[in-house]
Length: 394
Image (cartoon, rainbow, N blue to C red; front, side, top):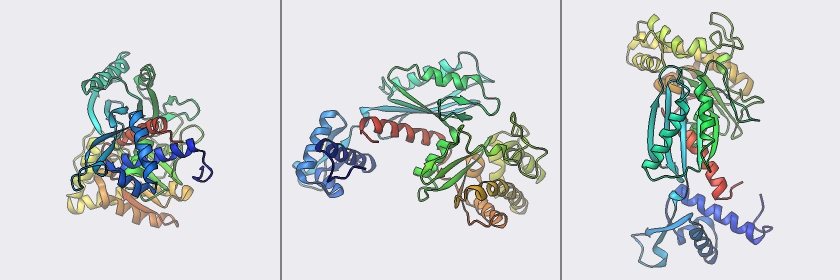
């Protein structure tokens, strides 16, 4: 990083501008005096940068600080959140959830687009049209960046989506359709990686630079954050723990299917089957909501529920041990529908069983980014992209 002493005047201005903009983003409107106190910059420097940022349309005068006397020192400056807009997608086999947000990440509108069966040749176009209608409904004519979270591998070299199973064709077609939007950057990312980013920035792992998010839902996966960086691997496959060979399954996984892997122990269908063995209600189709409901029911079911949770924790710990002895993350976060439903009670059980399987000390936490973790992560990375462009961040 260029130091203040060796920076050219233009570089120093850019650094100061980014510092002020990030403070306004994180803390909301501030007075010039508050900006001086927070940045350590001189009065003339702050006055110059505020004037400069107002000319660019990134900062606006938004009011006065009520407890101060009226005048220049009371003026409040805020980030012009309408300067750019973003959108985020959570793409599943059964449909899409989307959010339109402003530069500050505030939600302006949401929409759900259900998709029946495997979709049709027009599904991607219909989803894109819904995005545009949703954005225009709140006065947004152009989206600066769209971030898409989808299951599958995102090739680090090409940015293209590659399936590890049988994903609907419209998933890849949606990405292609979005790239046709004029003046819009499109970012494609694995959905579990986005959930991991959300847990890192706003969720259970805010105090950790190294951790693994284990996603336990209809599908099973992981996001690996090491030294503050998301790790994707050579082909984008880091975290595909559904294929991890483990004891207790009916066979071994293959290149074409993960049923014999860790997915066969803790995927939603397996959890529903386990719940029925313990006399707990579970939908025979084994979808994610049913698995989530089974875990929640177990928490209220006394001794029978406790036995179910103990056995589920044993299964989760087997996969967690395989991850931990290789990566030694020190912390595992349980996310997805099952992890969220089990909360601290399930996380504590997994931690105790993991301690018996591995010599490495590992804390297990319940995810706190919530059911919208994928969308939250997509909003975060879209916002990062906007700031790199508008704030000049590296």
